[in-house]
Image (tube, rainbow, N blue to C red; front, side, top):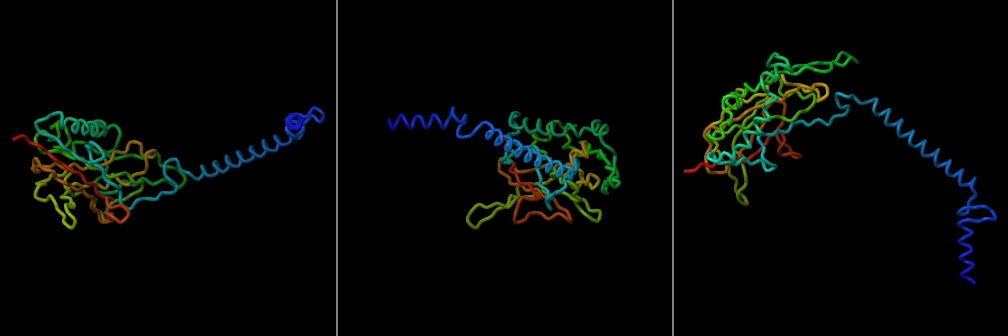
Length: 294
């Protein structure tokens, strides 16, 4: 009998036909609760939408409103086979270096002189190409300066389609990461790239450099400079045709059949290189090994 009583109590709690209550509440009570939560969540959604609308009004489509700009931009190289930054090949084995030359050709195709002439302007060298807005009137889209692949000389791939790889004189392309508004160099001094032996650890307290293995280097453009006319950069939306300036390094007589550790860095009178937070800021390191069959 006790079990039957408990069973009836549960039935009446779920639906009481005498009071017409469902789960202890009448239809009007449930209606008021649902109405309250409906209005409450509509209010929250409206508040969120209003907050997002107000925030979006403070943003510029072409330039970040708040920018934690790096004092030193990063550097990258091409070709880059993998995340280890190692370029290893055999001069007699076409398959071992063909992927590098194909990567360079694909990377440099947008820098063809004909393409650059269609998209970009011939700018005055050795000075910043500043394109300020006129108050509230945005000067967009902003123009960009031509960087023609012919400026890379024997590393342009125009006359030597293999970029020196089968001859044991490979070309490496270096570029700076884009930073909006950055003005590298001051007093008319353009930033430039230098490459040399990387100091690396071989023992507990022993360090080594491959200075005697690197040999002679050749830079394109001359002196490995990033001309000032390519700065400042205004952003992907504001400067849709922007072509990053490049520096090519050609290794003329690097030691064969040996690992050579190389480090390239940016040099400018207003760009610090390396810091406690990022030891690789403003520099890039890689290993180059050219195998030759005797």
